Amino acid sequence: MGKPKVVLGVSGGIAAYKACELLRLLTESGHEVRVVPTAASLNFVGEATWAALSGNPASTEVWETVHEVPHVRIGQSADLVVVAPATADMLAKAAHGLADDLLTNTLLTARCPVVFAPAMHTEMWEHPATQENVATLRRRGALVIEPAVGRLTGKDTGKGRLPDPAEIYEVCRRVLARGVSEPDLAGRHVVISAGGTREPLDPVRFLGNRSSGKQGYALARTAVARGARVTLVAANTALADPAGADVVRVGTAVQLREAVLKAAADADVVVMAAAVADFRPAEYAGGKIKKKDGQDPAPVALVRNPDVLAEISADRAGPGQVVVGFAAETDDVLANGRAKLLRKGCDLLVVNEVGESRTFGSEENEAVILASEGSEVQVPYGPKEALAEAIWDQVAVRLQSRRA
Ligand code: CTP
Image (tube, rainbow, N blue to C red; front, side, top):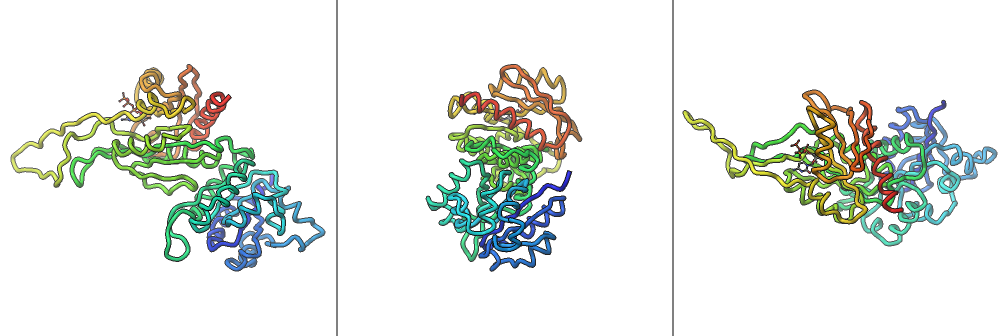
């Protein structure tokens, strides 16, 4: 099998320089990349850079090497087209099927998955014209990644930044691995909690747990690549923001509950992958707790935290909402999992066996997905991303049947 063929479209925005990094990541991971810049984008990054980094010519117009019919051939033979950055103008042209240069022609002839990574000023992104163009492209099966929030050109900040090239690369890798052009979670809002809560005892100490957040982040990344709008409620994680996800940072179980309930109000799916502390200290000491000579430490009294999964399951935003929980068990894994599924009232419970070196912080996981109607799907030991895809497969089936 030859190398996967990727077309990297670059349109005329200042973020064009970040596409150099995306190109490197693609070529270094074994992809054959053809860069198709727009004429405007050459004001930011020149043709020589694209040709040198990709090892292929980088033309902007259909009039070069006409005998090779590049305006048809490049799109037809691609396994993936990614446009990064995609300007407001590029989104408008793509939505309306204009074909006045090599990139827009390529977009019309491509039959493979197409990913747009928009970057522009907040006003341009929020303008109804742009939003309608984005909706049109998504309706037709393209994956349009939500821009990140942060520093824009000049001094202003807001939504419109090109996500980190490494994270755009992650989306491309997953879309290529799936190999299907229709993102099956398109139009769905999914809420994922990730990480582990910390319950403060005093300003410097907390009760916490060993969750890294990697499984929740893998769920967020795979959901973006399958077209979902993703809200990621992240508790004390130190991982890069997934491209396209709206990341809400929280610390404690009570904060996590508030953020999840708020986002869940219009969500199609809620996945509780976070390790939420069941208890918190009854008292918070405003100053650091000091040891006292000759005295035993005072016992720490705990109170129960709200059970977010049980609450979301019992009080769903709509009859079609799918709720997924996780269970980490050390003994009688399946029996405990079944009992927990019933107790929590969710649709799916992902049960994994945990121990000192298993699961926490690792890149891999093994699990059984238990369903409320009795089915069990065994997911063999492998990357957390594979488990995430298996979970979305189960969720997608349920979303389909509830819509039907
Ligand atoms: N969970 C939650 N709120 C809590 C505790 C847990 O939403 N206060 C969610 C977790 O995100 C996970 C699931 O519930 O999806 C299972 O958590 P777990 O701590 O294993 O369940 P418990 O009910 O605490 O069961 P046990 O203490 O018996 O293991």
